[in-house]
Image 1 (tube, rainbow, N blue to C red):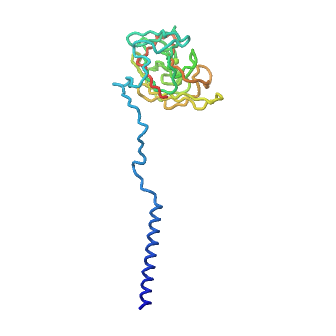
Image 2 (image 1 turned 45 degrees about the vertical axis):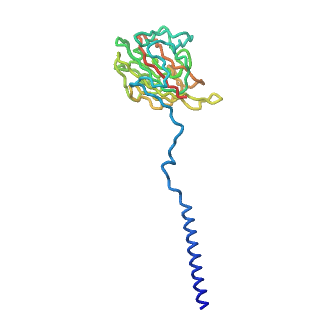
Image 3 (image 1 turned 90 degrees about the vertical axis):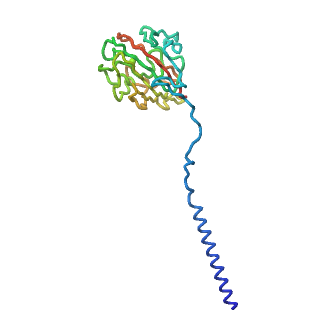
Length: 269
Ligand code: MG
């Protein structure tokens, strides 16, 4: 009787130990399983982007834009050569190139930015090739003449020329994807994202300049890495520079001058 009871108790004890062990094993296995992913784990709640009110229509400056020309005056601009007040002609809320006055540039200097600018070749334009409505937007001016990085402005409506020199090109470096140009007499737009080059302490290039351009709303340059400053003669190369003005070109060709309007920039630094 005693022996039978002891055996029974032993069996109960062994069963209890076995169950406990299995329980511990299960608990251990549960611990090793990764936690179930939750959607909240990949949600970011800061930093909260600033509120920017878009322009009321395409091309109108958004609330955080620096307006460089709104049709009234050239207070934001100077002559490139001597930094005196810009002498291009403001009339009818547009500014027209004064070729004899030379290039003009912004008083402000920029590194990385978004730019909107509108331009119009006059209906009475003359000439052909590079001598027909030539101007340019220097995305960073590095000299008083044509130093820097030129986004070409030209009448490219039925006006053949070298394709890395047509409207929408990065002059002699990048051919536009398409010719999105309008007829002389019609306003055209450039929307540009400019990322300035950076340089090492020793003067070597750290990162190239990158540019994205929409011409009349059509993508013509997509994050193009510039090979250096744009040059009329010879291969492009970089020179060390810091923040720089945006410059508009008074090209020396004899065709009637082009006009600009609605110029604004958003500083991305
Ligand atoms: Mg030009």
